[in-house]
Image (cartoon, rainbow, N blue to C red; front, top):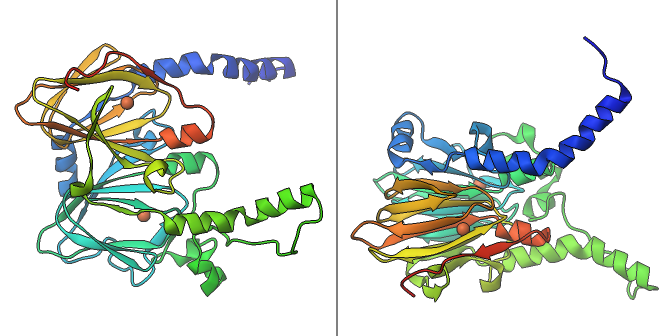
Length: 343
Ligand SMILES: [Fe+2]
Ligand SMILES: [Fe+2]
């Protein structure tokens, strides 16, 4: 094979950066938007854990993914788990569709049922238990793809201790919500500004752990408050401004009455929407898609999108997005188009 010259190799690398954004626009336009529940249900008949929106399956979603999962009656997700369960350096949202049970998250019990949602704090040990005779159906979304891209994805699972990175380092390492454990410089008063700044860096992880432990975790459906916005009636579900220590994943729920439409907008964050009630139509970058309850929609980055309720029931959409991750990178941008026609 012909060897490329140094000039050719490095010109190609430079052009890769220059061309990327335009190429990415093309990939966004081609990505699959609608994932039908009927298809997912069929697959769940064969295996209880089905990835739906996932870059490993061809999705263009770079920052989060979504899967469906069934926990059989009176069992525990990952039945061999005894006490710890598992923990990971990704943020996770779990939304329960059917069934009842409870979760143990860092030693605290949370009881849940249909319509409830968990925001699992970073690196907390957790496990989920079905308490009834019916299967539990849930969806979950995590920032796995983002953590993998950063080279910081750690999944420690009680069933597979041979893959532990930190938990084998003793009892103390198992109690912390900081991968590798937190540390503090305790030199009394810092002697100069640089020493003070550096001490703050060392103390950051410990402070972060305190904030994670103080974070809200469980959201009950009945506690959601819908209020009018340019996009329509919206309830904020998970957001740092309402008591969650979330850095990457945010959640809102939107409700659109029969015959009405949401606002239109576009943004730089990834958004995966679960239809939790009703039926409707969405326009995404000039394409129309008809959907029903339990279908999933993956909204491509920076493409205009707008929902229409074409049914007779209220249309309810659970939108899980990575706006917070983009905010923290200084990259958030949201353009508002047409406003909702019912607020
Ligand atoms: Fe988990
Ligand atoms: Fe959106």
